[in-house]
Length: 250
Image (cartoon, rainbow, N blue to C red):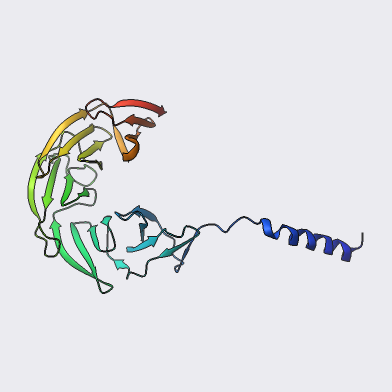
């Protein structure tokens, strides 16, 4: 076979395969940055995109082409974020800020001070829960505490403490499940608290043997996955006073 005919055979082969090419991988349009974190928001169709001290929003309604929101990026020295494009909670190295987006510009509505980078927070409807006492960036003799804040208005928020108590574990990780809060530490274990309609905290169970550094909760399935020092363990959440191990990988 001549070189010319061989070339045409190869060309025809590639042309015939053109219709069978795999779809393009998911990509982010509008930026060349290397994104470091994806963090879920309270809106199921959006994710926070955290990189280089900048917070953007990613719209996931069109999965083949992930587009960054046109919302003006919020450039701030952040540790953690929660909320959505309308109301955003931003934890910095020293405080928790409540931000509001108005006319494509971010404005600060309120602040809770005296936080450290390793402190944890979460939002539960009208409450903000903050857990302090992680030894990573606080003194070892500090008593771990969990505090519930409430503001009657997000328009002009004044955060007031409605409940506070000492923790039976340090607050390495913090997660919510319905009306309950999971506080866990790789050394002290897991504690589960219930929060009432008024913000009162009640310890409902304590599992010092479940020493975990990360909790992933699948609320619809009533299942939690704990990352422990020995591996990964899955528990049923059907009875929070008697967690049952379903499986483990060690």
